[in-house]
Image (cartoon, rainbow, N blue to C red):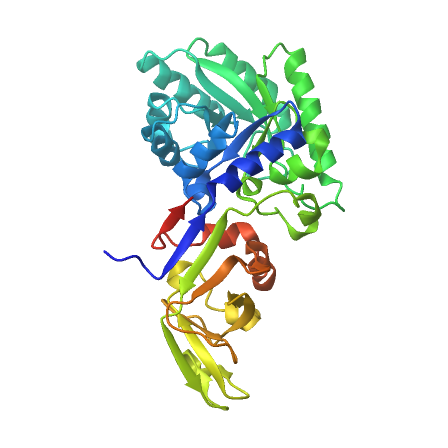
Length: 373
């Protein structure tokens, strides 16, 4: 089958570079590369392999199936599940050697029972402590009991780590990160005083790794920074050395002259003030290009120049006002990435749409072919 005229380019050397750069930032701490959600839309297996080649210690995923996919690809490095999973999947966690996260008595007991049934010794578990995000994790006051319960389930279970998750690390004007770190440190001290062997201590996400040196500890869980995207535009100045790994591109499939006053796309929401040239590109909201991107000033690169998306983005196609540029069918259009001396970033889309770069890249459809280099 012929290649589609819309695709995603993934620069795996950029991934390797970003992991190496993060390692210089965090010093002796280890990098755990977060590859959940199909590697934030980049491809979990390919990104995982590149990150490990660059020195990452292990990987983090959200779902059991994501971990199994990596194991079936031949990856043997540590893979941490970031939250408790459905009880009927505990057997798969143990069978595939995934590191479990726990924060409840029932889950710890289920892990221990499954390990016993399968004659597994040393199933690794990390205890997650909620220090204020109020999403998942045990209360700090329950940590000693739960940590002791994991240790008491030896030899089936081993407490391999203790961690928390930062809620506002990308907000440099907030002191909430320091509050979380302080609460976490107090809890870890209580665990140690109670004789609980904590294993790996980890706090930092990408924003913590880049902006809060006091959060580095034994390892960091780096997600968005691995892909070369700033966690937030507020800390882009700390991300100058990161290289974006993803580019979203298409080719012009139709070119048409339109007269002043004519409209374009569904609802005729855009009318041209003067005669111009419209180029059609075979990308739409089914591919992850938001329908309203044109309404918030979305632009693409054609011939190294910025051109506005006009009219609502349709399911499979969008239209671009290329003005007086001479374009032909087959010319390359860059929606995210660099062409000539200009770039459009995922965070630019995020700023226009009132969201973040994470959502932009995670929303790119699997029907778009990924090309790796």
